[in-house]
Length: 219
Image 1 (cartoon, rainbow, N blue to C red):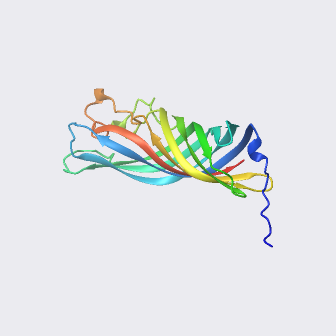
Image 2: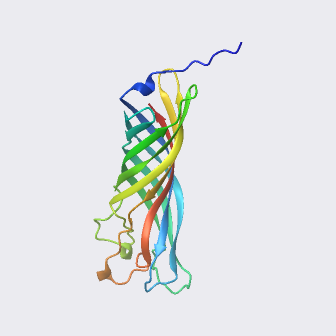
Image 3: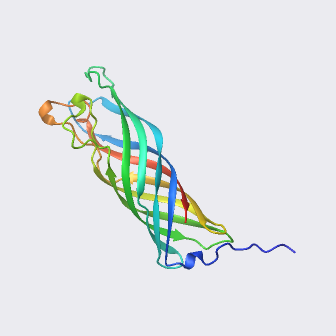
C-alpha cells in the first residue's frame, strides 16, 4: 500500500497571529510619460542593476482563506539613467548620465488569499498598498541637475500584487512569492525653474516605479 503523506505542523494556520521575516531580490525600473516642453525630443534610458529587500512579517488570520499582513522592510536597489537628445541639439553639459542608489522604508498592508492546503503545499494570491519613504531622494538638496544632482520625491505610495506557495516543514513555513510593485504617485522632483529651463526634468510628466520582487519568507 502507498504510504500516507504526513502533514507537517497541521495546526499552523489555526493561529490568530503569527510572525516571520523575509529576504529577497528586486529589479526596479520606471515608467515614464512625457509632456510638451522646450525639449520635445529628449528622453531617458534606464538600466537597472537590481537590489535586495529584507523585512519582518506580522500576519493576522481573518478566516480560513484570508489573512491581513503587515510586511515592513527595507528595499535597496541601483539603476543608471542616461539623458538622450534625439536631435543632438540639447546641451546637457557634463551631466549626460547619473546613477540612482535608492534605499526605501517599505510599509505595505496586504490581503492574502490562500487556497485549500494539499498535503504540505498551499498556493496563495496577495495584494495591497504601501507607503514608501525614500532615504536617498535628495529632495531637500538645494542642488539639482544643473549641479549634477538628480532628485526624487521622498514620500511615495505603491500598490503590489503577487502569488506564491506556502511549504510546510517540521518547525516553520517557507513561503516564496513573486510580486509586482507599481507606483501610484509621480516620483520625480523637478529642477528649480529659477535656474532656467531643465532638459533633464522639464520633458517628464510622470516617473513611476515598476518593480519585480522575489521574496523568500520564513514564518
